[in-house]
Image (tube, rainbow, N blue to C red):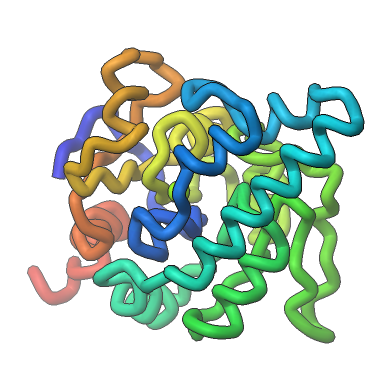
Length: 236
Ligand SMILES: [Mg+2]
């Protein structure tokens, strides 16, 4: 675990990215997605597609959805995801998911492979309706990560400050920038693969610098324990 920035606040909630974070990296073929949509890998694909003329935009969006559908069928849970979520639940810490993936893929993930409570579950198409006790407040008007708007809305719903939220994701440009932009703590899951996050870090953008870098999700347990003094009584 590499701690890069000082942290003052306890963690009172955790927001997760989905693809490559709660699920194993590699199910989504980003290269194919960008190629088919006609967007350079270094760009923000959703922003680029949104700026296309209508006919081109429709085609590019369809390509994204097709690749996401293929990817959903390959989805597997990341090691430690269930254990971490179970532990957070026992600690009484709320969890949310914010993904740039579609509502359809997020729904599939929640129905087929995820049991831990998340509220809200936010896709690029807006917040999923998680049942009668959860009326979606976050609409599709909340822009996709890395815009920090959704994080501020989550903090409001949880009744905590954004600084008390830990954002966990595998993309420096999308997840770390999203958390940093809201003033939250950020943990970059960097499994050492030659992925986009390494390239982004090499670019050295300050908005992309995480508070913590971890190689596995379970490394977050001692980090949160230390910040929240969870073992204080045991140590005494
Ligand atoms: Mg991801």
